[in-house]
Length: 111
Image 1 (cartoon, one colour):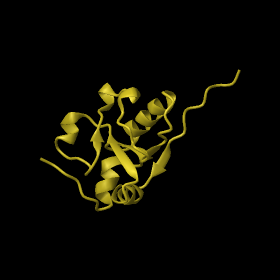
Image 2 (cartoon, rainbow, N blue to C red):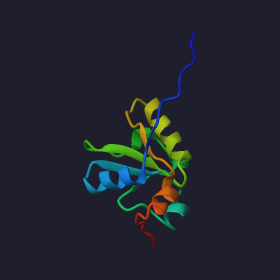
Image 3 (cartoon, rainbow, N blue to C red):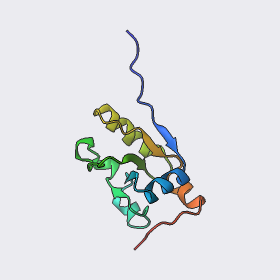
Image 4 (tube, helix red, strand yellow):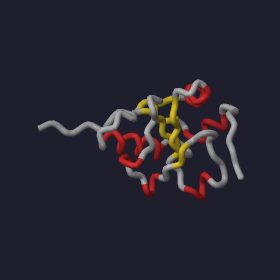
């Protein structure tokens, strides 16, 4: 019997994600915790903290590509794998997270 393979997660660059958001082709789901998103957020992201993550409760992407994001890119991979294990074809994440997003000079929102 062969071992089950981990679901594959595709890396997207901050520029890819920003372009997809601008074109209305991406639904960005931020899986950071509320204390993190209160300080700084991705524009237009839906916040679904990983601590209470349930793939069944993700919003309907309405034809958009779902992309997970976090601080550095670790939790977004976990979220993508969990969604895939639930039967959803959500296999993309923002590589490098909000750290890479800011390093690319892209805007964030804060209170």
